[in-house]
Image (cartoon, rainbow, N blue to C red):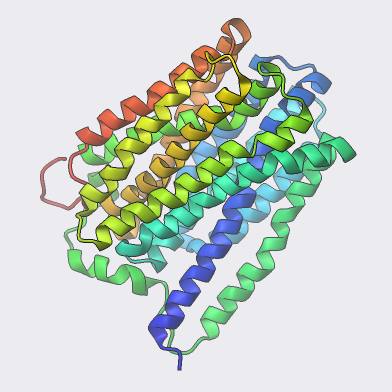
Length: 422
């Protein structure tokens, strides 16, 4: 006979499986533009600076909705937020097929940012609701693994679609895939609602919540703490580097390393496969250390610091003579990034009060996207005038700064009312 706890655990992992699938589609939809950048720039007569404006349109709206999406997830719950955001961004992706110039491209990228911006706060709310702290990094690792899988699948899939049907059809097909995920999501939650004796989502979060008994600060109080701002800034720096890789790396290998579309399909999945290994490996490793009795602070930092250090290798990408060596360096950098991400995203849920997880997580995500948006015009101007090498140096340097901020944050533990300002 299945016990309520076993059934709860089964439902939790089914939810994470569908959140993983949503994460895959989320990143496929946003990564399409990077893969098709040379073809779209040519057909629409866009400069690199023009392209950076289109990227920025996405990032600005994504920034705003990351915060609003956190509030929506805290109020509506992760279940409704998932459905709403998925439907909106899928339709916005399909609209890219009718792009006629820079203005319409910026409009559709902005709409995509609106839809996608609310997804990760909702997903992290679901993770925090269903998974206790000792398993939460594993769930976050699976969720972020979807990012790597999405970006891994995009180059070969989009190259194949574009070669046969053209880039406009690629947007139509990929955007339409999102609507296929809504029926199983709704069916799972109908099954959860009908399961008698099964504890609901609050079951996983309840022990942590009850342990505080009024000791948890408000959102405004959390926003006065150095610990929160250091973690937020560390994430923001590394997010801006990730957006550089996401939106500029495929074009770099086509234009600076002379990979044709066939080579893009055959080789550019490799960096994202490395990222996939990093997401799972980093999450499972830190959770394993906690299971062995390590403190949360020691376990997370034991993965965060070497992961960020590995990412600094990306600064060498523009200087090595071989395109294949550059590909290997980028692969290592992205492996390190996703190992860093699976842990830093979990840390955010561990330092914030449970009732405000989605909102405060959303603020950190918004800060990262805003940093990415602020750097995009500079990246476009640098690439136009100096090439890609300085941009890779800046991306690698961001991780060194993140290590400093992580150490300045102090111990990784929940921020509580009445404790020191850190």
